[in-house]
Length: 294
Image (cartoon, rainbow, N blue to C red):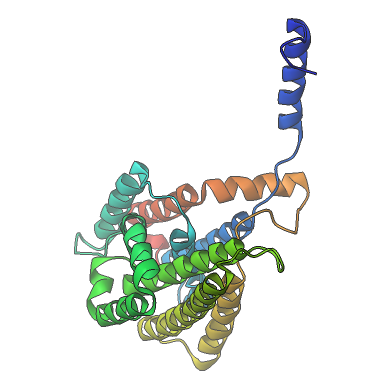
């Protein structure tokens, strides 16, 4: 007992024991940790192939599947704050990219796209909540319309924003399902809530389909994959898309050994810093040692 009647020394002892137990108990691995770890591995594959490998098409086949999970998670997250380090890291990485391109114009780094998406997300959610299918159709139309010019303005162009829209629809769908509750415990508003959930379920599936199709099309235009490479890319992206449709943020059903879990948690919480180190380091190495470039 640690109430007011408990001696001061005993209360302190109990508090210390609780604190020790908190640190001694291993933290669980979140589903997000697994997704971010897979994505950052794909990022490393993409960067290594791009900067150091001749004829790196196969590296790109797998590496180009790294961006969709990041954009998806930006749309899925509730956080509205834009960390300042996204801005200054994005500017630095953009300048490094331009440096290696003889100071020509390059699309601003993906971190700046992330910042714009996080700013826009609450407004997009408001539109979807209040105008439903009309807002959804308008958003899809606008993003498809700006595809030709968006790639020069933001990294990954409108394709990235389509994945973020999918992530937002997925989050709204998950939240709506949670509001219904288990079967037999629904409130009096269950019929209308059920209809909203069904609409959101269809929206997220359509958003996923459009994002995946557009992404394959745009990546094929850029890389001209061979038939076997394109087939592999389509299958891989299809598996990824299905996984994202099933994604729920929360403790993972698979809990690895603590040595592995610690690494997964670290990567999950420092993913963008790891990305920046990978990309910035590669840009600097290639500039200082151009002989390593393919």
